[in-house]
Image (tube, rainbow, N blue to C red; front, side, top):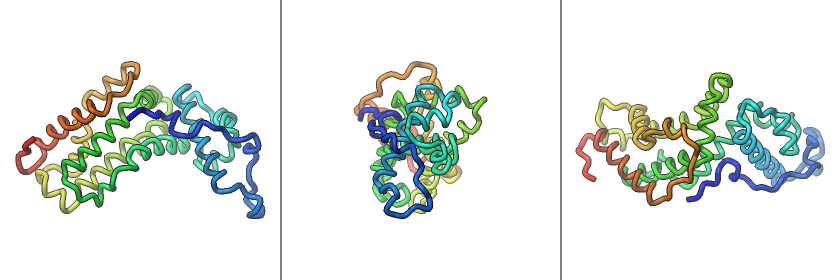
Length: 239
């Protein structure tokens, strides 16, 4: 699976200059932009913001700069996203959703445990090992001290949301009894992610390279899951 990157998640076509005008909230329905046009404008806004964040860094990008490049009014960003942190939130969330949208909901997926975790693990590694995702993570780490809302927003919509999703899965009445009683759902979620990520922080020190191919990622997921299940299941895990 190739890496679309934050800058390639959305269409490259830009909105027209007329899009800089704010639609009237009280205008007649016939005069309002069509739903498809509004959606295209928002997609272009997220695409533009993602490009600028990765290129210049969160702290050096202003709402005025984003609005100018995306051909929208600054007020549009405030109305739709509440400000720069909310816009960044939406960019990361869309990136994450693009990978996990093809996976059945963990709350209701009734396939074998190894199948569910194997599919999750592959999608997760495909996401976090993309050069764009690594650059994004490096940016957050570098600017966390001076831009605390950046780190908070990134964690909430990225790692935090993934941990919550896994904790809910490990809390399922049919899943929880499979694991050792002393291991809480939150511990299981964290341990699984650590097995999959390995030396993630070390990777952030180096320039992102080409993403690993699916065959290599599948092998890595299989090894990581074997390590995870051997240490957490009530019954011994046989590979």
